[in-house]
Image 1: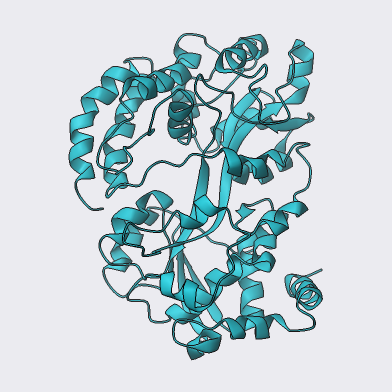
Image 2: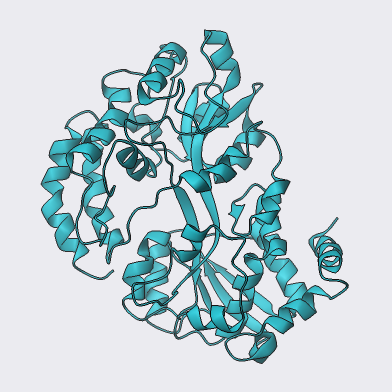
Length: 428
């Protein structure tokens, strides 16, 4: 069944015979009802969306609304291109890294969506509240729109657990038998020198916030007001050292240098050379397609001494303040977070939709795929800063010395603090 046929059937059933186009037209846009007359828009994205679930959602929107969407993919160095176009004649819609929303918002380059949300009475009752509120700024402006999210869990090879006689991780958000000590014990039992590693944590940068918070850091990477770099404080630095010691001390995690090629982690896992891996929901399609003769499943991150949380990647888009067709862009954003639009992301296992109703359509494998949905209630997000990009450009390269077992996390992070704090005082 093609996307448009599916959309027509569901919308007719759910709206008493109204067509999807009529529903979209009735919502209105920044320039007036039905998209304010705009019948085309441009859309800057960090990848080509042709033939993937996102592309199918956009195609369905175009057919239903009559609005033509020109996607402009930038598959490399997207952040540089994004900043360049904002200062000139920007596209009507742009993808924005969730960590950069505050800094870019402070420049006035993004349209405030709050009046549009209120005017169109957008029903957000089915949205995770924290994710919906994420782009709201201190002055009340809603400068971006979260269209989906991608929680992180532990993927694991069920067959390797059984072969090694190791108890499987819990199937609920539980610390029972699933603490950091338990995780390390299992990783050791699952490691077979020269054949496979038991675990991989530190390649996915989402571990920084997750492990820090779970170890008792009050704020994770940055202070609550975003003005201070707190990853070097004792509890946070200790957490990063714990994850690194899986390699440097315990030898149950691949060496940092062996993980720098594209998809190195996913290849190791799907080839049966890695028993446990911390990764996003969005890696599920690759894993499901490429596993070689074994069963895989997912579990929550192991519980730290203080908590058991995880971090989602937040898929965020914004309308530039100088956009020529903001009305059409707003219509697309609303569609992508509707029940109908969100179903494309869920059915394709690309992301979790903001609207919780399509999440009932998640299908196995893995058997406990619904743990991704439950992750919403166990989430942590790094605090926003005026210049997260600048901060990352300073401290993350320095962490290579830690990951290569040549320095301690506490020393490197403490040494970086002054420069990072200075960068956080700037807008970027």
